[in-house]
Length: 134
Image (cartoon, rainbow, N blue to C red):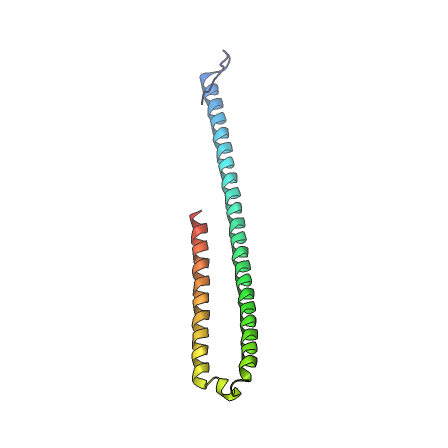
């Protein structure tokens, strides 16, 4: 930075130095204010990005749930149709699930649900870490 001082004969050296110091302090204060405003703006943008990421994650979860429900509904319909086809061939009693089969199915379903929850948590943590890095 080039500072040019124009000194007149009536200005004393002390007045010139004082004036220069005042100008420097004012410039420094302005620079600090600009920096503070820039930091505040960046923090605001970061909060907006975090909100957007949270919204997106929520939407993805909602969409995934919806797809899973549709898949279950389709599977249910398919099994219903298969039962109708097989109904003529076999006795209905032989197709019913035993309590052991039901328990095994429930265990499997619970494992899958737990696995999906864990995946959701990991995805959420990954997004948070990614946001913290930014």
